[in-house]
Amino acid sequence: MSERSTLRGSRLGATSYEDERGVEFAERQTVAYSCAAGHRFEMTFSTEAEVPPLWDCPRCGSESLRVATDRPEEAPSKPARTHWDMLLERRSIEDLEALLDERLELLRSGLIPGAAHLADRGARRKKTA
Image (cartoon, rainbow, N blue to C red):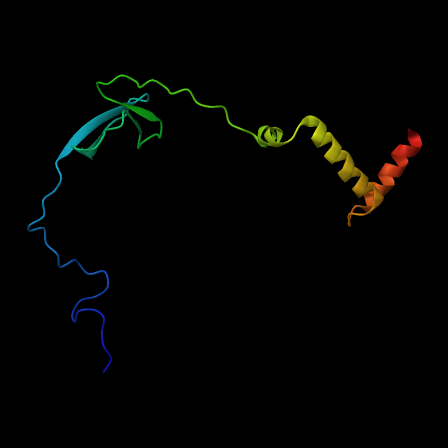
């Protein structure tokens, strides 16, 4: 006979056999929020938790403010760094121009495979110049 990993008479997804005796729940507090659309809702937090002044509205998704509090001051945000900004931290414009000229010359000379169409275009430009 094969061994069974479940209790006899129970099935997968059956109710738990644990009970709540001896369990002490954390003290809770209910905090009210309201959004600009007029939706008002309550969230439950532990009394030990730091309650956030802003929360997303579960109905419309907009930013909701805790009732009876002032809007927190916005921290100044740093502008987003683009790839170009990070590139300029490593190289100067003159270095970038030199690298571009080197790569274009390699492409036009055919040393880089798959760029034969660029070699013809470069030769036409030199003739017109």
